[in-house]
Length: 579
Image 1 (cartoon, rainbow, N blue to C red):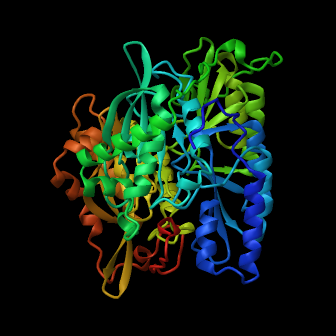
Image 2 (image 1 turned 90 degrees about the horizontal axis):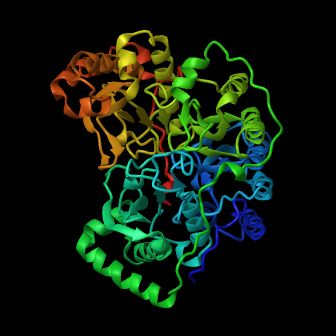
């Protein structure tokens, strides 16, 4: 039933009953009372996901709207140390993943997370996944209003609803704070973009977006609804997906395919009918308390003396510090390498949040974190602390701040080691940072996926890579296909042009060639994304095609993936994202 709304406590997503049930079902499976397929379906709805290696799991933790408290960061640190391999990983949907978890360790992991209000419930499987939000919600001047409370409310409302625990496929929801769409609503099944019309707060509603092998830009379902209608709209769209989603062909089961098959106009007719039913049953409107935090609502803290800045402070401040709409405060973007945080870094960030922010941070969909509410005069202190933790890198939100999926390190579907390519490209860009072409291209972004499924979001990058293979005689060449000119903005999603392929070992050389082409041929004030959307394909192919001319007598190195000396082979299995 639809629940009348209050703003839920930010630590209120966990459930002891969930964990007890998981333990009971795990006992049934391990005793032979439950078969593997039945158990797999259950554990996926509890965020426990298979990986390439046998007898270990990936566990995904929901981080609703990207918000984490210092207490939750300490819990994540404990899990990193006690059950995982010493670090966690931020996903492109603001969640946290831990790999190489033994099934017998899942109970202890879930109980530690539950103590901090975190849950793995419905983080995987055919469910409503982690509800995401603009990571700058409530702190920047360009937003229409703070959308984070609405994302939190939406997750609370749909979480554990038995009607939505066995959907045709996964269902993703995002809340953006303005038309620039920092939460990527245009590539979600359901997106809410904050707007103010005639003085009233509300949302543009988008449906049917998504990436994978067939990217789709979302349709506009409503140009504007008042915020009070968000719950019924969210429920109506989710109900319709449950009814019309393709349960026979899972490869075509996402909402975007259902809308395409039915036709958008017919979908809207169905939607309006369901919406009217829900409104008739639940006429009460959503009432939200004021959502904008003011300076007098910040926790009290002792006076802190400002420290002298490090020599690298100015460059870091230029790229990593954002103005807040609150005078005297800044937001700090912490640039992470491949979205990873060690246990020590989780703990260090917990201490930083307790000392310098409002007690929270936000994870981002480009695999970084944001520290809000930092006093401007204390920025040197924060930079020093981050540097001591090994995460004081500058150039956040630039070309060198790339995004990658887990790739063949752990994923059954991956062809290539996308994380290894990410490390390689960062090293190459940093080694060539003095080149004018690299400096010119800093406005671009790079996103990498280990297969065509786009978990690394290569479709919407200025420069995107997705892993693949080519047979050369009797050998298999690991390679990357290029997607150029993609982006997300107020006009929606633009999916990059597929232009050329390059061997994995030569992807860095291709990247330097591409940024050189950009420097030489760009128009004034033209971004990397817009340049590669416009440029003659022949100019790109002149750079990448010669690199792909690999004969069967090429050196053995060409037939090794990055990060390994083993002869490359295809080792793919069944991906449980399709289970």
